[in-house]
Length: 244
Length: 134
Image (tube, rainbow over all chains, first blue to last red; front, side, top):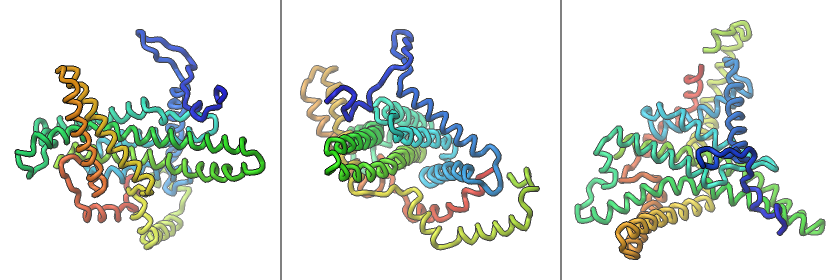
């Protein structure tokens, strides 16, 4: 396949402004560009929507409020009232992933959530943060996390390593889920779009129908994955705050 | 609240009317059902579940492998700790999948949630949005 025609070419990182800091490549890339665009979009959406908060909200204000209430309820249901201080963090992470995914749905754009480096950084940050919260709140009692109550001591040498591995696998499953979904979905779209051209007028309409359906599905996945990331963050936070 | 800011735009009559309509809409069975089914429940497609299960399983094995490999490098016991930890990782993966399947999500230590109280909480959500505003 020719250069730039591969279905994976869309995930290529391109340096826009080369920056070298302390021997580290900190260039401004197309990935950074879309992160900046995402932050700007979210800010405009929320600040613009609440610019004049009317008693009876208009469409824009409704959407801004809906997204707020959606996450507020998620935090309330999954973490409880102790989760209130962490609402801004969860709301930020949700909006960032959601809008980033939607930006990725634009033709010729770049999906930064399709890179494991990005999703793992976010998941790892959540993991470290949640662990620190748990240790700060429960001190050494945190260690009972790895030893479920009512288990005979004989089982401890086997069970504790298993629980620790299970705990450590959280950031990996959290990040892989988001990244793999975005990567697979976008690659699939490109592959099917390629079929349209190669099959021509005779049978090209069949993959075309698929692409239309897949695009719809991708929008659902874009929302769903942001939702899953936020809700799992809530659940981890709930574990950290309440242990068992 | 916002009503204090611009009383000129909406007459009290209009507001009362609107409040009545809003109340009616919120109390309708339809809305209640919609909120109950949609809020905080990811639609579970078969493919989605299959994907989640595989990710849970594989990530735990990967962590087990990484820990085992690390110990091998430190203690020069290659390949024994890797073998042991891959099996432990597999155990952890099965545990992750089991927890996911029975709906406890990823809770470490058997912290079972009270499902009944959860369901009650969801019901009151439509009111919540209005109170938090402003």
